[in-house]
Amino acid sequence: MFAAKISEDGVLVLSGRFDAEQVEKARIAFNRIGRTTVVDCKDLDYVSSAGLGVLLMTQKRLRDSGSELILANINKHIKNIFEYAGLDKIFEIR
Amino acid sequence: MTGTFRRDLHSLGKIFDFIGEFANANTIDNSTSFKLKFIIEELFTNLVKYNSEGEDTIAVSLEKENHKVILALHDVGGVPFDLTTAREVDIHQPLQDRKPGGLGIHLVRKFADEIRDERVNKKRTITVITHVEQ
Image (cartoon, rainbow over all chains, first blue to last red; front, side, top):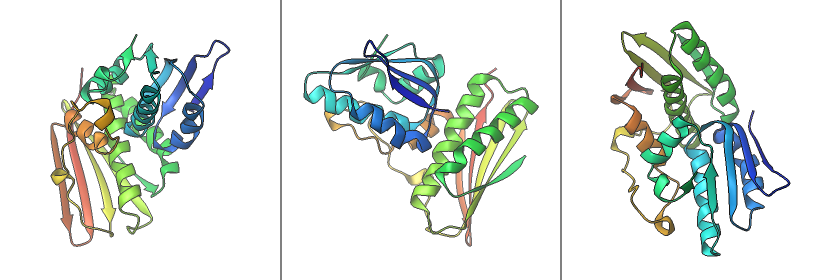
């Protein structure tokens, strides 16, 4: 089960499995973001290239207005994916 | 073990369950299990998106052999395409030049020790061999 919820303090909290089936649900949440936002991935188990695409396109849109997504608490498997895809140079990962 | 799944992104949940069963039955570690999920999702979703003219179902098989996992997707019908000839993406491009397309195949190549894409008449088999991490 995948969920993307914005907390009261403005953090986007992702959980579950961010696969190709979840892209439309995820886009709704990411399209609401209009400023620099921390994405908490503590409970995110998995991301596929479809999920990376949503993150990448959101980062592009935000950077155009001087903002960005900052990723926090990503697990080692997802971190590997970011490194292999060269996305560790495009996102600040905390 | 082999499972057959409808050519639909809604099959992904069942495919992940299938991989989980294989991992449990073969005491596959989490890193390898993650890798298998990633590879199979990428290949399956490519077949859903780019081979909609194929038959209604796609078969997925998984086999452990010593320290390797051999996975295969079996597809019938549709458009001939050889995955191994797909263009490589440039992962060093700056953000403004980056496009999401092609990242999936790039990552499958990173995870795979060997990839074969064979077509005999209308039957296509994509085989990926990857090593067990632990």
